[in-house]
Each structure stands twice: as structure tokens, then as C-alpha cells.
Length: 136
Image (cartoon, rainbow, N blue to C red; front, top):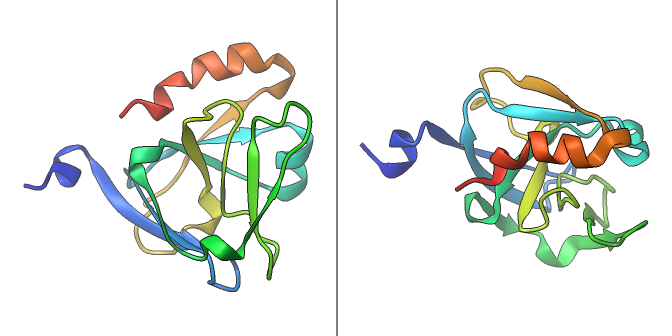
């Protein structure tokens, strides 16, 4: 049995709408995803699949990414400069990992999502409650 299978993870692939940006991420087949109520996540419909950097691989499109930052500047919002889709980014809550938009994963490897609310109005408590998501 491989280390990946032994860990309970599968490799999911995904990317942006025009498919220039492609990535893969190792996560459970039924991952926990967060639905944040902050302004940018609400407006974009982002569902966060947060993983440590070691479980994320950018396969193509690095030069097609543009960056947007606001407020503290900690989060690095990355989006395809061609189609405008933010399929992943570096989140403020986990600056050493990645947040993948679960809605940008290809069909076929996800059984279902466990959706957990993330209350941005109490960011410290919400961040502490999901600190385990970037444990390797």
C-alpha cells in the first residue's frame, strides 16, 4: 500500500476555467471544506479545502497567475489572468499552506464535501478551530 493510500488521501486534480492553471492536491475523498462568510469568499462562492504546502502541487500555469492582496496583505489571492478564476490561494489563516477552491476540483475523485462554516467575524476563534487542517 502506498503512503498516500495509507494516509487515507487521494490525489485530486483541478484548475481554472480555461484550464491554463492546473494543480493537484492530496486530500481525503470526502474532505472537510470551509464556507467563509467574509466579503471576498461570499462574493466568489469559494469553498476552502485547506492543505499544507506539502500536499499541493502546481502542475501548470504559474506564469498565468495574477495576485491580489488587501487588508493585512497576508493572504495572496491568486487568479488566472485569462479567465479570472481563483482556483487556489495562500490564505491568511494558514499562510504556510494553500486553500483550494473545492468547486474547482475535477469530477471523479470527490465522494462528497463536509461543509463547515468559518465565521470571519470571530476570525481568531474560527482559525483556532481549523488549525488541524494543515497538519502534515
